[in-house]
Image 1 (cartoon, rainbow, N blue to C red):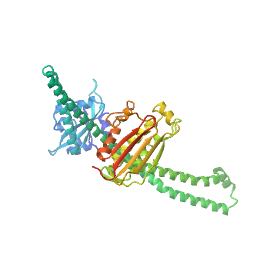
Image 2: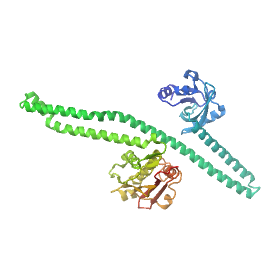
Image 3: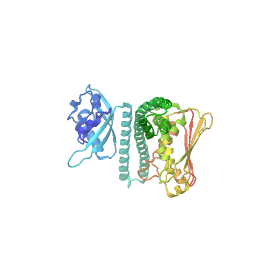
Image 4: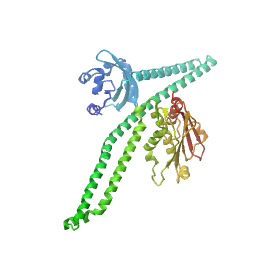
Length: 452
């Protein structure tokens, strides 16, 4: 991407974006960056990134080198110097657009985000990870130096090193979860935006269908009156009536309007489901209808439930009880439904394995059941009639990064994050019951109103 292409691309975006070289030279910016710094875009031309931030040139170069050599987005933090003398802490996300080569320098796209609290927490998290990584390295060196001198001391150092490595692993997992949450937030914004853009023209079409149908009926009545009054029309008119098959047209046009009405209503249902699933306006605790969240998720996954390649459709059997509204985090709960239902579909798809095809070929099913346990708790059960899970795999289902899917098919975070959402966010329970050849059932139990 050239600086000119970047400017054209970034001009319509509201996010502050920078295009820099691997040496830190500003190649192009957009207006939000200039507004953030209190400068004009012309004043930023040919400047070095070091001139705009409080971090040392060495630290900035290290970050740019990390962006240049990584195939994924690199998260960092930059403190900007504003024109009025104040500083602004920003979270940065860097991605290489043109890798370094002997012929040209690397081109790096930086996205800045003014989130003071999030940036502080993220910087603190990265600092702790760096500190713990350095501490682990120091203790390993001490272990090697003292190995011959004192066996007992070696054992103690090893124990402390192991503990620190576990802590480092937990912090790295937390970092991964933060990135995953950011991805889900971006997905929700995109889904809500698409739903909004589709809803406007569909509402216009749906609102005018009634009038178009009424006008057509009025014209058809006029034609019928004309036929009654003029029983012997001129040959030209009679030929036209026969050519267009007027009787069939009168009968079929009502069906056409009905089909169009059904189609637009279907689109409106899909839009409603997309907006319900994204729940961007419901990030905080709110009372919601659990069934709406399940139905919205099923609507989004409907294309995976349909029949294809001589394999029958996956039947969804819903047994809903009369549930009270539940106080919860709606968007996160929808994410749990998405993860569990997508896994159930994976278990029933023809690509799962040949034995599974024989087992469920004639009747692949997903059963969803909701019920009230007592006045304080409700239960949601999602079960499939797939091949099932053995005890060895079942015991690790909620472990982070554990997956039975092929490389590139799964990250091993879906069920782990679902477990955290149900247990930690909603003070509930998430269990799996399965045996080889008997399918798998995931049971969600959450309180009606107790959310931490």
